[in-house]
Structure formats: C-alpha cells, structure tokens
Image 1 (cartoon, rainbow, N blue to C red):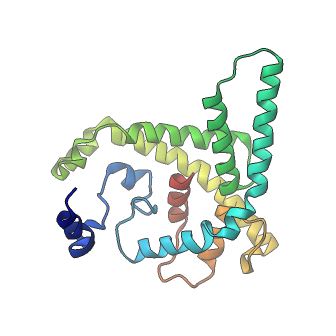
Image 2: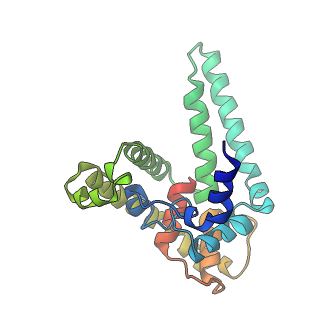
Length: 223
C-alpha cells in the first residue's frame, strides 16, 4: 500500500529481492534448485527463462499441442456422457483434474505407458503434499542442521529416488528415439517438451550446458 516501499523493493533494491529462498523441496525434488521456479537469480535462471519463452511456451509450441487438448476434451465428454447414461454420479473435480493431468503429461512426455503416467503423478501429488507442510528452517535457516533428523527430508529423498527411476526411463527412451530418427538435428512438428529440451541441450548454443537433472527439474515443476 506504500508507493515508496514498492519503489524501494521493485526498483531501488530489486536485485536484492529477485532471488529465491533455499527451501528443502527446491533442493531435493527440484534437483538442487535447477527448476525455473526455484533456481537462484542469475545466468542459469535467465537462460531457462529464455528457453521457456522461445521454445516451451512459444505460440507455435502451444498451438502444436492443440490436437492433444482436443483429443482429451473429447475423451472427457465421452466419459461424462457414459456415466450420465448409466445414471451414475459424476465427480467433476476428479474428471477435470484427470483431463488437465492427461493434457500436461502428453504435452511433456508424448506417448508413454499408463503405468508411468500414474506413477509420475502420484509422486508429484505426494511431493506437493509434503512440500506444503511447515518447515521451521524456511523461516530460520540455522535450523537446517536438523534436516537429517527430520522425517520430511527422508520422505522427499524417497520420492526423489522414485522420480529418478520414472523420469530416467522416459528421458532415455526419448534419447534413443532421437538418436534413431536424428530429429535432434532439426525441429520436428511433433515435439513434446522432453524433445525440445533435448534438442536445445544438444544444440551446443547454450552458455550453461543442460544436464539430465536440469531437464527432470523442469518436468517436475511444469507438469
């Protein structure tokens, strides 16, 4: 409510307020703060913002996923019609959540097994639930020395281990496919988010090279 304070924070001392806090979920689930949401302000953050703007969220990319949105919308309507015809109750919250997750998952990963789909989203839901819990070290950084003794850290490490297994399998499959088809040498009309990130990674044009963990961090937050 104070223009003077707003100017101090957003203009005079903007760089001091541009960074992100180092929270436990960013360290573990987001692969050492390498996701766009949790990475510290600097060259890597600027690079990832540029990749998002020019590659992941460009007008062309958003339009390319139109068929996925339409396909999943038709599936949503059909499932509602079937339940209504059978006289069964319809949980619209669950239906819309399923629609959203399916669209995001197909846009990010392309065609993968339903088992991997289910496993990934269960892990994301678990991590979100744990991350929303109060962690005193978020307010008092000196308390981070207690993390090894807290169950929340062990739970996050367990989720991270399971995420690694699911995402490594999916990313390795994409890498094999790109190596076979040589799509990495150019832009394909059927790229999903992993394909885009792998193409950018192999382009040799990045100031800070992308790693597989960086890609997994982006996927964990964006999906």
